Each structure stands twice: as structure tokens, then as C-alpha cells.
Amino acid sequence: MTAFTWLEELNTRPPIWSAYTAADLWTDPHIAQQMLQYHLNEDVDLSSRRPAFIERSVAFLIERFGLRAGTSVADFGCGPGLYTTRLAAAGAAVTGIDFSESSLAHARELARSQGVTVDHVQADYLEFTTEQRFDLVTMIMCDFAVLSPDRRARLLGKFHSRLNPGGAVLLDVGARPGFAIREEGASYAFNLMDGFWSAAPYYGFLNTFKYEAEHVVLDRYTIIEAKRTRTIDNWFQYFDRDELAAEFTAAGFEVEEILGDVAGGEYDPESSELAIIARK
Image 1 (spheres, rainbow, N blue to C red):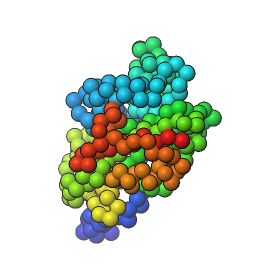
Image 2: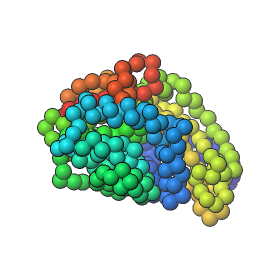
Image 3: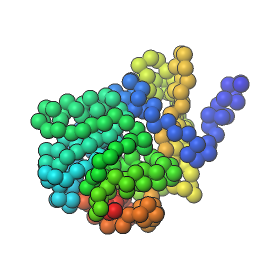
Image 4: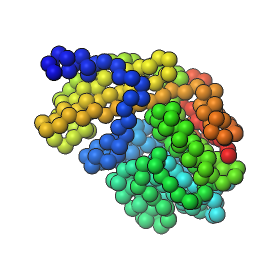
């Protein structure tokens, strides 16, 4: 293949949802450590919310869902335990599921240091199985929006089967106005994103593609090191509230409320995010 042909392929829009590379973000030791640092950076909202928002969100969860001793919560994509530790401190029996060994190591140490017990499970949450039943399932920081429709349906089926009767799901997603401000483009840099993708020197390409009919954006990173080339696809779908509600209804849930965020904010049709509460 010539360099020209390779560059043509690099800049060609792939079929929607054609590759799923989430494991690379969470299981590559270097990238996982970089992701953890983003989680713990209190000055940005890249992988986790800022502490003030998390505190408001946890207070909302405790009040809205009556979390106390005897209630059970599962946090899918729990990261470094910023929610699980706080929810356990309220008395709930908490299970946190995450792909990242480094994030879970931090979560377990955080729970230990706070004197609370959390069952942190290292697993791909799409494959996670348990005999437990939960009163509340959470999935925070728009993780639902990175999944293809078939994976979302599979996950909602898992939520429904693991919830107690009357149990609830709370999650957030990207909203349609966020799609409007995204732009297609291509960029290239040595050690793209300041060494985020590898400890070794590399050249990085970022290609952003928009899928107008589906309101999906793909950020495709091509990372070229001396001994290997990798492609990491970050998909993200932007929903309107009716579209999101329909997916939950199709999975057997009753939609209770559409919110602006997972801290109980009022729904805003101009916002780039929204949240949903649905019950079994």
C-alpha cells in the first residue's frame, strides 16, 4: 500500500459502529493510567465530574431513591469510586463495575481509607453477570452514549433483569444540541495529546466523522509507534428525550422523568446533556 492510499483510507468515513475498541482505553496499562489521572483531575469534566457536582449528585440520589441501609446500588462504569464510596457512606450496599484495573485499585483504596465496604468488580459491564438484585442502577458520565444500539439494548436487558421490582435506572447521555456544535476534521501531531496514548514516542492522527442521520460522532485515533500501529474508535451518540425514552420503553421500563443531569437539574432543550430515570 502506498502512503497516499493509506492516507486516503485514514480519511475515509467508516461504516457507523463498525469497530468497538473500548477495551484499549481501559486495559492498556499506560492509557488506563492516563484515564485515571483525568478522573482525578478536579479542574476538568473530562472523565469525572468536579467534586461539587458529585456531592450534589450523590445528595440527589440519596433523597430521590431513599438510599439507606438495606438498599442496594450497582454503578456501571464506576471508575475510581467517586460515587461508590459516597453512596456506601450513606449506608447502601454498593457494587461498582469497571474495566480498568488501575481505576478499581484507586476505588478500593478510597473505600478502605473512608472506612466503607464496596464490592468493586473488574469486568466489561456488557459481560458482567451476577445473581444479585439491585434497587438502583446508575451509569454516569454519558457511558450509555458510547454504545451502539444493539449494545445499549443488551445492557438495558441486563439492567432490567438485575433490578428488584420497582427498582430504578439513572443515567445521562449526550443531547442533540451537542451534536450540532461538533465539527468534522482531521489533525496530526507528534505525541498527540501530550503522550496520552503511549509512553514510547508516537505519531498520532485524529479524524472526526459525523453521521448526520443517526446523530453520532466518531473520534478515530490512529497511533503509530515504532513497532505497532493502533486505531482507537470513540463513538458518541446524541439523543433527544423521546428517542432515549423509547429505548427504555422497548426494554420494558416505565420512564419516570427526563432531567437535565444526574444531580436532578431541570431538563433544558438547549443543553448538550440530559438524564433519565426509568423504573422496572
